Length: 219
Image 1 (cartoon, rainbow, N blue to C red):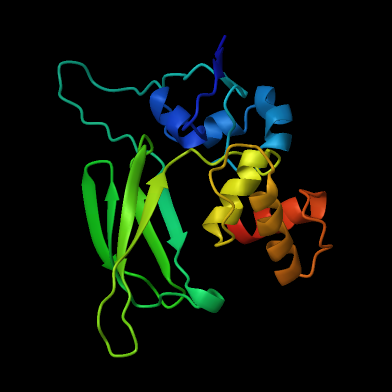
Image 2: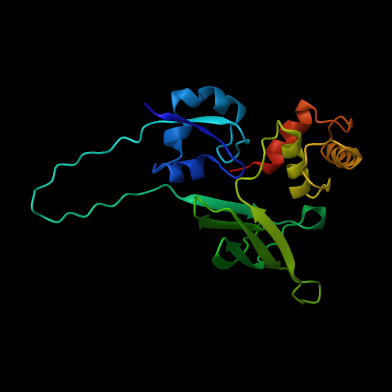
């Protein structure tokens, strides 16, 4: 029969799949009962608190096997991949830069690629963490930068708080993503619109939301 799940802050389709024992988020995401929600939330990593997601029954698979013998079965679950591109001034990527990624209690070390990208498999139920990266100055000395991470906390771009979060993440500072479009957010919007050749209104128009989505929500 299935059930309906009311989304809380920090949840996404991957975390729901893990919670309800599905091997892939697509088994929930692609269900016909969720079709209307998917029209609003095209990115499976982005849900909004109080969204209602239908959770279908997780059907058990039957396998013929001989009795009175020991059998081993392997369940392959879909990987959850965290991706982040780190850029500095003039959108110059921090290429080939050493970093330490902490996700909950796990620490991963590595080096960004030529585009400044970090890519790491993480737990579908991850909640928070941070990235410490070590770019070098012109003299070759390592500097230290830190980016806090809150997995599943990005609101949809249709929400004012989602617009603010994306602006902040892209370097257009507008303060706490509280959903209130004040002067600081309007100033950030104007700067963003000017940079990308949009109508400079300082408002969250459809064209601005779409550009924010294109620049931020790559998968």
